[in-house]
Length: 247
Image (cartoon, rainbow, N blue to C red; front, top):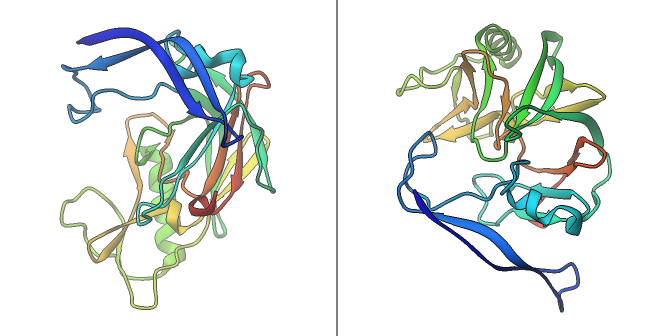
């Protein structure tokens, strides 16, 4: 429950002396909400293709393009969200996107996952979601990833006290450097570094990938330090490695 209203929304322009202004923009302020997002916020920025999402409302004014660059959880630097601009980073790879009804999420076809010499078959569509923290994989794919990760790291895992993540490892003074995880999307190989696959919980580094009942979802930890661009006219999502603290 909440209030639906219209107002003029303005953003800083690429030219710092100008603003991009959009009159009669519809937005809402929620004061009684339920669901997995919890009750700690008054709303979210809609980046999907629903009729009232920010992306749908801005539409042709931003050439149906937007991108973001998310900084690591340990960083004090804010990430960036940009509208209407082309990708700026080199080493860009792109994969065709699809949507479903309702068009809340964007999907990419994930063919397989590579960790070291191991390859885990997928062959399913994966949601790319900037609003979910963890990455979710169906149990059979997750089991393959967990087994391959343990085999590649060759350290003794430490049980997670909360029994939420597996595996976890004690963070060593010299640092923790897990192997790369390569997501083989249709037409694009996206290489995830340790910052994308593990997160620090006290003195432990735990795999930020968890099993699900069937959903494949790429969460925002996995998207850290990438420029992720959405071109809705070309119907593709692009990834480019980037230092998002300097983006």
